[in-house]
Every structure is written in structure tokens, then in C-alpha cells.
Length: 152
Image (tube, rainbow, N blue to C red; front, side):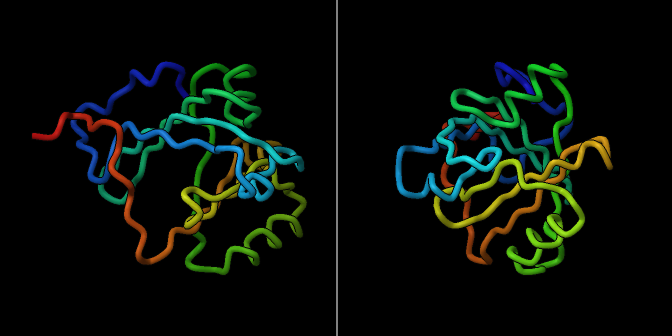
């Protein structure tokens, strides 16, 4: 979590993209993007950088209620979550598995209507928030607003 998005990774060039923004516009899709059980419209600024198989995700909450804004208010900058792809277990089974273990869903949704993500209230048991996500096999990131370092 970082306000201002001025962070960079010395020695690590982003393989996929950096500095992209996506918005949760007022569309019917918002009904599937709950925040603590209620429909939520929000805007985030997200930056991705990849080093080998490790993906770094920097998130700046811009507007709307989010678990990311909550984290910044409570803790300041820091590591908010760890994400798992769960070895292709169907997404609904993942959600059910977290619920069965007593971890409530706190924020979820879809990006560009193609992928899915879900964050769970796991801090009490693990000291961090856990996320699971699904990207379709034919997923391609949209062109970002900017690259770091700049592309030539």
C-alpha cells in the first residue's frame, strides 16, 4: 500500500506493465464487487512489477470504500496482502473453502469483466490478508498509462 505511487524496484524491470489505472464505474458489474457484503464502487491506481515468478502489486486507493484505504488508515504504508492462484481450483470452490475455514470475504470483483479476485479477513489467523484470483488463459494486460522504466 502506498499513497502517491512513487515507489520503484531497484534492479527489477517490470516484465508485464507498470502504472496502470482501472476504475469501477457505475455499471451492473458493481453488484458483483462487494465491500464487506455491500455493493461498492471504487477507484484504485495499480502498478505491477514482476521479478521472476514474483509479482509486486502497488495499490493506491483513489476513491470509494476499500480494504486498501482501511489498511493505510490503520497501519500506514506496508504489505497489505499475499495472493494465491490456488493451482486452478475453481474460483467458487476457493470461496467456499475460505468460508468453511471461517474467513469472511471482505472485498471482491472482476477487472475488465474477465478476471476475478477475492480478499478475505484472515489477519487474525495469519497476520495478513489473503487474496485469491483467476486470470483466463487468454488474458492480456491492457496497455498501461505509463511504463517504468519508460519504454523506448
